[in-house]
Length: 228
Image 1 (cartoon, rainbow, N blue to C red):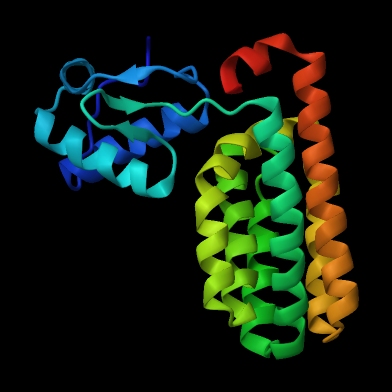
Image 2: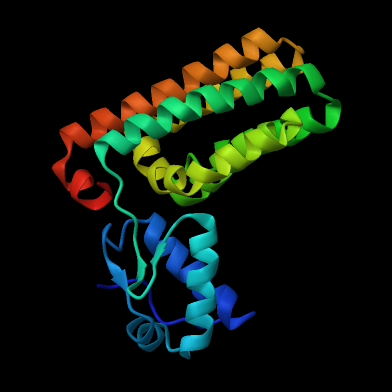
């Protein structure tokens, strides 16, 4: 199992370990179900076990790894049924977030959303799916935070890690410009302070992403072995 080349530039050892492992997980270089062995990771990254353990704990909080008592850390398995459930829930939660955000929108929120969309557009020439995925999640989190509903944020946190594991595959299944156009439509509806249009645009966007992901998995068994 190859994760990354040995680390060179180190701001903090734990942060570097976190970035290396996160990139490997999101980039599907570690298959789902894999047990992450601290000693093996430390040897490959040329670090001591301590920063590796700290990085794994941070990744668990993000939902990108699962800690099983007395067994260790694992890459989560996400089944086809999980995908259907996650995106059905995400459609409702993010749709509500967009509706609430539109009723509370200010210029600061609109500018943040436009900046995120612009940064996503910059990912198109290089097809930087990892950065695009992080920006995608940031776009949705921005709207959830603007909703003003703390319980909604907690519900979303429960599936955000799994969504991040799936975003790259969903993005590869659709062209980036289409996804960006959908984000622009959501932003425009929020800017117009139109709650119904914002909710509808968000639900359409999430539903399309979920459908594209499921179709991608059905067409490509290799993706299914990696993710589910």
